Structures are given as structure tokens and as C-alpha cells.
Image (cartoon, rainbow, N blue to C red; front, top):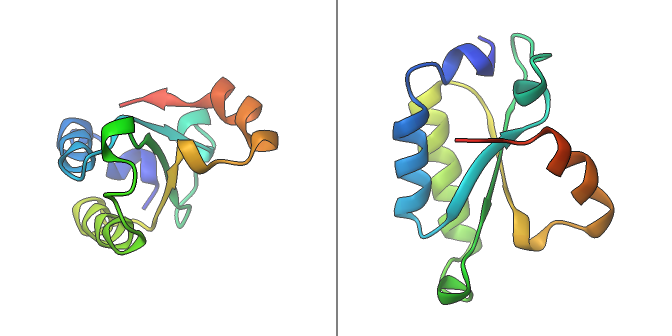
Length: 100
């Protein structure tokens, strides 16, 4: 299934799930955002850890969130933290990201 099809009608639920882990400003990027996703593509999601939550969200939390997002959507999810993104990746992702 295409990720773009998998998230139809679920964006509010996806956003709420991400925010329940303490993240803010969830967005999609990559092939799903650009409309070039295919069956089997992963769903690239990006969110920010706000200042008050830094040090409180672990890698285990992120793995659990990814698993919950995959169960909700039925597609592989690649969850990324915007605060930890390398500088060289920021410009292209900023241009293509779509807020949830």
C-alpha cells in the first residue's frame, strides 16, 4: 500500500499520537509529501522535541512510537527528530515537508 493512501483519514489520529509522546509540529516529508510514493514506500515523519521535553524522550520512546504509527497506518514508518537532523539535510526537507 502507498503511504499516501494509508494516512488518508488518519492524519488527525497520527498527529495526536505523535503529540502524546511529547513531540510538536509533526509533518510528513519524502515521497509521501511529494506525491511520488509507491506501494512499499516508507512513511517519513518529522517532529520536534520542544525545549521542555529535551532529555525526557528516549530512543526507546521513539521506537515504540514508530511501532504504534506502523500499526495505525499499516506501512513502515521512518520517524525523525527535527532537532537532531544534520544541517545538510534541512534545506530539502524544509522545502518538501507537509504539516499534519
